[in-house]
Length: 167
Image (cartoon, rainbow, N blue to C red; front, side, top):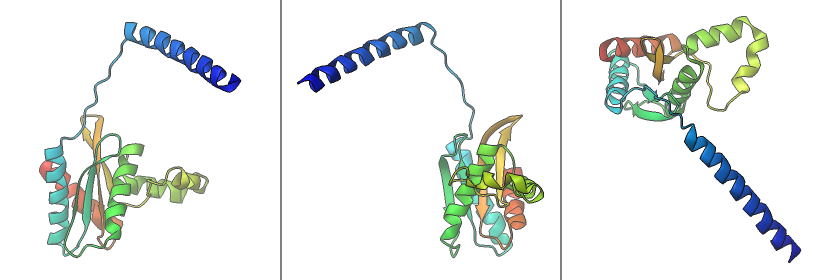
């Protein structure tokens, strides 16, 4: 019985603290605005990236993520490998998370081996070329990742061509 009374007392105290915090937060309510790529633009961009690579004979997947790294659009070309679904998503996640192209990150880690542990920081990160942050002015609004061409530099070319055409 003592345990139940102690638990109830603890819960009541936690409730009072939460209420106090809530009241303080309400009096100083703050909001933030987040600009991100629209769903329509994301689908158009993924489609265009797959088409750009298709013109070169590459079967790829293109993934577009929002500013938090969540997938908005993903398109896998016919005959693109199943692994390209995850690699393109991870490239997009990495680009938006680090706010720079994954090719730059790949080079930085190769040039500075002491940065190798970055690759293990999060299971969603992938330091291979093919992820590009999307910007409106200087604000990152999402990212695109392309995977499946025979070389990351070719994934980048498809992504850049799609960005130039759609955004």
